[in-house]
Image 1: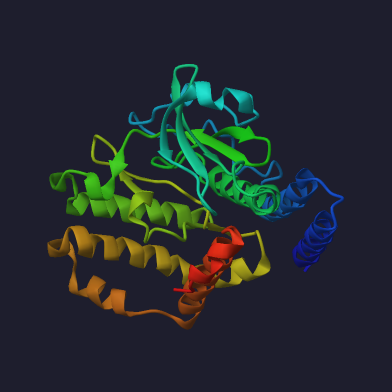
Image 2: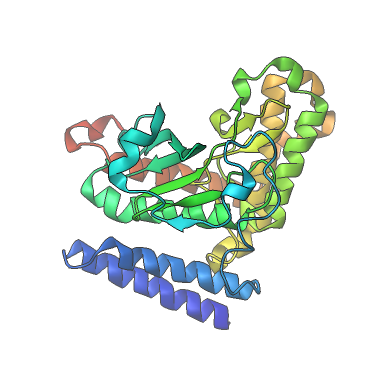
Length: 308
């Protein structure tokens, strides 16, 4: 009850901060700070007062990592200036448009890292939702720190950009088919279960580009923007066991698409199952994406945005 009371208090703070911001009198850091306090309350409930689920120097992410484990011992606020982004850019991985952030590969003092930057979005999106999404993903990555195949946080640039380590890899659809063995999918399932054991649901594994394959045939996962973390809200904690199945089903669906000969009869049956909680979760995720996409699109183009 104490946790729920503290959570409700912080939610109230967020609502008040957002209303003040819309009235034109509040900076984004205060809103972000309210979200951060929710994460701290959840961390305290788990017995992790630092709110980081351990230091970032945990287990090595593997030899495929572009940033050596010893080189990133903690996450830093503003590891470099925003004005340096262009000069540090190796290549643009995905240009930002509408609700999507600009994603770039950077060379940071000889280490390859990835920046996800919302700063080029419209002012409202950049200052409120962008800051929330950066913090949301950072919290998920910090909770997953030390799990091989999950990038670690390098730092943030203000409230609108997140920098993570780069894991040398290719998207699973581009990987050599000989690497997509039964052992690979067992390792992918084990990686997903390791996240669930930490209280994290990835939430977006149906996107093929979020599952990667390293040169030595190991799985890696990126893009935790849609992740759910236990302790962030009472509702998430309650429905967590059910929405874990969304991740598991995505892995089986991926296997059925890329290596159908490996799918077992039990997995085929599992693909057809879906609880009421999971169906509601999937619908709500689609609706949130629709709202974000619609209101980050110029008004004259909004008529073309449909709820899918």
